[in-house]
Image (cartoon, rainbow, N blue to C red; front, side, top):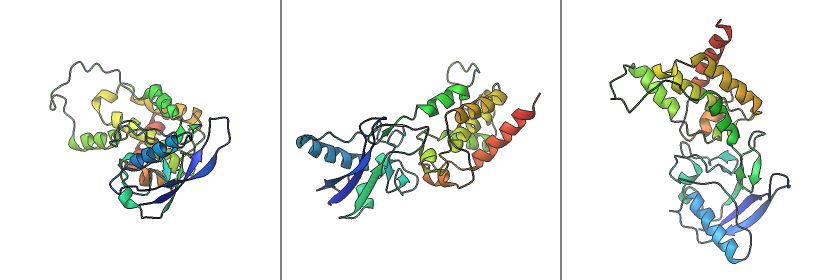
Length: 247
């Protein structure tokens, strides 16, 4: 298939960017979206044009670094997948695709389609850990945990920290990301040690990074490649309220 790409090009964080038009020809429908960009870049290099810079690592939907906005949707409009898992068979011959970096105050553009998402790392550093001494890997049934709590912890732990929730939210809120990390540990006995401090510190760090607040648009849940539920935001709000009034 042949496609027309309108790609955001920006030399660095200080430069002004703009959409530039490229032709992607002879694209196989079995290619992933990132493989399609690889083909385009090879063609640009042959022509002596600077290739399009974009983030990627595992290309298996695990790392979350393929942070692309495709036709206005974080990771594209297919639910439950990252950009690297999006295949070209979802598009039609002759389509025009708009490819841009994620837009958020806390995600400054580094170059072209690459943004600095280290703000999420700093939020994790503020409290997304436990000081419980776990030692070696325990047997699965060594620590009694109720199935509802275990299931909820696993659902929250599915978050890969890609930032799609931030990119999709009209307020550029990171509430779903922070809520998933807070909820993951608060459902487990190992996470009870810093439970009170964790939610306060992570919310404080989130606000300091310039993320917006949640106003219940639910776009975060729609864009999340791991389909994290907004119920975790409600849980984080309850945890924060309890921590705020606790002596």
